Length: 264
Length: 271
Image 1 (cartoon, one colour):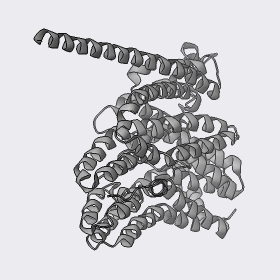
Image 2 (tube, rainbow over the protein chains, first blue to last red):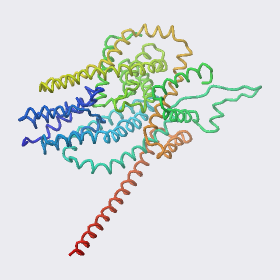
Image 3 (cartoon, each protein chain N blue to C red):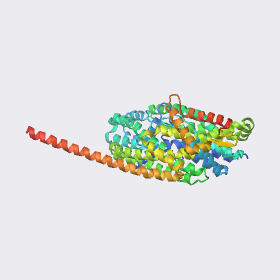
Image 4 (cartoon, each protein chain N blue to C red):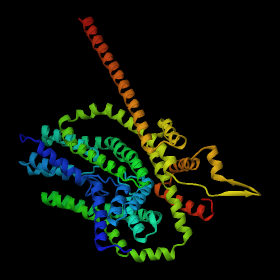
């Protein structure tokens, strides 16, 4: 295996992973096809002299794989570094590397890229957009482009650092995820009173005295209804047989009923 | 107002492109707000697009497809909702009420697309057996078609019958139902927020949830201000954790040194 993998090959893998990681996503192998597709330029180079081994390694790489697309590049990079150094006999090592890392990388990746970025930038952008201001949308798009550039370099980083990346990253990554979660939770706390809209229209009239329910609630605690609503759904989501789609349907039914009864 | 043919084609292609883009480079990032903004621009009414997109965005917060689960598709719903809001001239509320059922129906088509791709996976396996590299590439890329059509085709069909759908809704669906749907629009962000809280380790961060709530409910702080406040607190936390870690690491090296010394003294003893 004296054919050296150069930067151009790594970038080819990176670009293919960027646009193609989930194109053939399916219930059987999930990202298996995408992983193989991204690895092809490297496999063609490394196993050019032995077609039998090339075929076998292609089978290995089309097996079940699933992680956050944003984090997959690191795994690809480490995989390439290992296969280049040890060749076909690294087959089992590489399989272990892939299956071992995809879960933990998905945990960090889903939290940071799936939850926290959309929460923080999405809620600020939506808040501005509700007032007819599109600046937040533009800022958000720019952030997404920055993330894309970072993702492009992830294969190179994974390749250069090799397997030691995992140990060197883990300390800082934990602190980073923890701090980012803190930021996310603070913003979510702020979203409860600012984005949930559930004013109570009901008023009681006894003689000359008119009692406005919403005003009374506001005196106890402003934005109490949204807070209770979130609390109840949070509690329900912890129950068996209750999922997000059911939560959405129950809210729709509840809202239609409350509107018909004149409560809201 | 009717939709022009170019608008139907552009928005169908947008739906096709958006899902494929979301699976890959992810700059639009599966977000209803960005789709609403673009649709608003195409329909010539940016403000309605922003309003529909932002409301759906807030409903869909936290609803992300992890590990291959199918979830309500607010991205497609935002395209349909915005276009109908502008077309009917009945404003963002109308579009939002229409978008919610669209988002729920799209779950079924998402499942269908993911299922169809099993077929292409089998063809990829076949191509490996035949060692036909260009076929591997081709069948992988063909997954684009099932993904894209699962969004683009329904959008195209719905818009082609746009006018009659609006007439049907206006004639058949009673006022109390559309009114109820717009109340639901205000309450639905609670679902997304609750899901986010389920996903994050809230019990350890309950203080910060309260800080965020109090900042807005009692102090009327704007959202961007809260984000900055949260960022400042996050920097503090990060620094604290890093210094704790390096302290811990220092302890480990100290222990290691002790062990080495212990080892040496043992050797001396043996000598």
